[in-house]
Length: 72
Image (cartoon, rainbow, N blue to C red; front, top):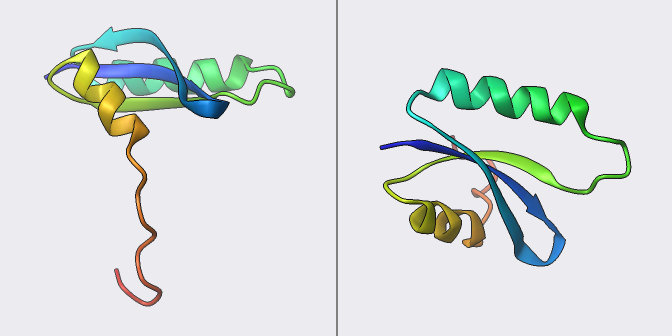
């Protein structure tokens, strides 16, 4: 399964920036993009592992509940 790099903006606006076969490449690109972001850009650069771009977008839009305090 590929790794997708996305820009996640407010109001659940997703922009697919890249697709990589290896995590190392996806992570390196995400770090480079974060370093180049202007301070006023509110986008979050995320890497998502999924079978398809549609599944990656679905995973990015899911609301995750915080883990209970004290649990690891």
